[in-house]
Length: 296
Image (cartoon, rainbow, N blue to C red; front, side, top):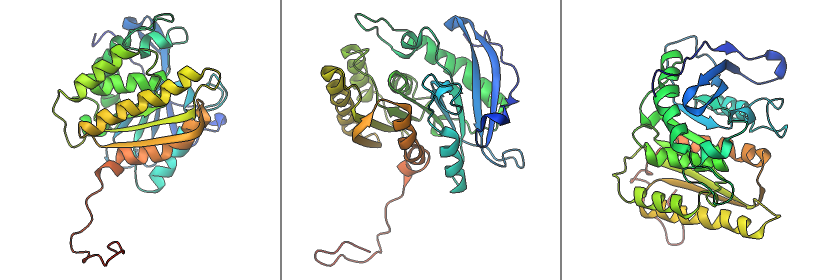
């Protein structure tokens, strides 16, 4: 697949849209393997053009829902520009690349197995595009840190599904995954079986990590699917723990399946994926604990 996608140039995004920070767009990239054309978005840290520093990269699915409400199908976004800017102000910089979903085949591209009634099953093609075409182009044109430790993938709902699929299918490329409200019920048991097998069959590296969350009100109009969101997320959580993978898990009992919910959780998720997972152990010379009092 590599080489069949022709990438153009990054251009500044429209300043009148109110997006914070340095957002770039690459327009009308034709992807033959997926049978569609897409724009791409890249958010760059402040001062990136003033020195030779390089940055970790997080690849985010549903790229139209990240920055500009005018592009989002719901009119709400993840406020990713604000989250990334706030992290930068705290000294934690990263590049974010947004990949919009297909307007007609989102479920096809984001699921490794089809739903019995609703289809799907082309996630391997989408992941191949990310790995073989997009990542090399981004590394050629933006100041990235390369290697799995510095390369993350993240998304919500079916975007969470394909993030977990990409992370387990290509751990040599993606060191971490942000998995927000994953709709594992769509690909169902075949995908869950794959995840369990992969998690317990390949050697884990210290940089591999997963942020996983789910809300308690993901689908209020369907009790069975709403229960499946939590059940499947916690099933995968158990496997991650059992396999010794660093994981941060959050259950928000009142959270809905919406951009506003993921926007609230994104800053802490990115902070953990970029640095929190690697917090060193406390110093051993903190002194002995008094009875009933933790070490200071």
